[in-house]
Length: 375
Image 1 (tube, rainbow, N blue to C red):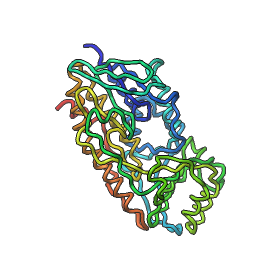
Image 2 (cartoon, rainbow, N blue to C red):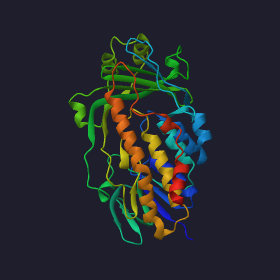
Image 3 (cartoon, rainbow, N blue to C red):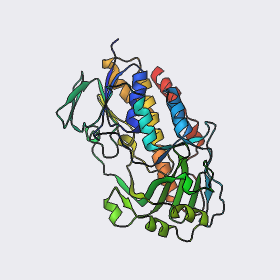
Image 4 (cartoon, one colour):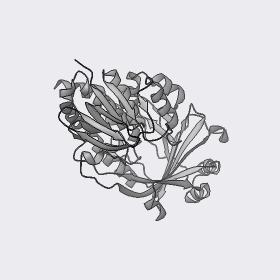
């Protein structure tokens, strides 16, 4: 049986993980990223136990663990600093606080030379019963048995699968960034904390082997941010948003020199992810708000599910495998999309998660996908 040829459009966390997973399943893979070089925005992402399980099976967990900051639990506090308990993780273990550039570099480094192609912006897509074709703005075109749209919330491939739906603005923005941990010498390197108040929230956890501290401050949006996805932020404006809160939080914010503001958008669950030999993955399929820390994790799960269901197929069997992938993943990601919205709506002085985390952190996507493959 000949190897399935797969083209992945998008070289972010989901696309690179999909490349590793598909290669482990015996596929021939090419990843095409529109940026001239890989360079994820320098902020943090939490890799939950279910995501780490996938990365372990793909052989990159040792490097991820070396570069991560361990987050065994996040202590939630009210604006005045008093404790309200907080989220912890299920039987799957601790989460890993990763600096996004570290994770992208780790995933890319695990791929052989010649798999990743930067400077390729997808402009056209076509398919027939036997193959799919993608063309790029630099004149390159490639043919494959399957194409994976891992090109984010602004996906150019999504409209080849479903009628386009506009992103939904949440009404909030996030101030995001990192600061050197040595600016907070009294903070333990593994400390993670969340302050939850009326309409606002601030989260911090360690990344880059504890040498950096990731921070995200969620606040109501102004009119300017309704039209902007990202923009340089003003640390003084961030400080003003949390004026009068816990002195420990204000100490952290006072050490921040650089931040970005991000408009928070998601999408309603899509009715379909797959059409013929094209399927969607990650934010292209299920863009979600960050209030459960699951965006990157769900794209990692997507990657393993897709690879498991493609394993053992030939080119003729790809469309059925992609339908099975969609069937396995849509309900789970829709639940987490909704849970993320619910958590975002509960920015008040009581921490109440929108979804039971035990069903998230203890989940084994490879086992679930294998059961679907055998069905």
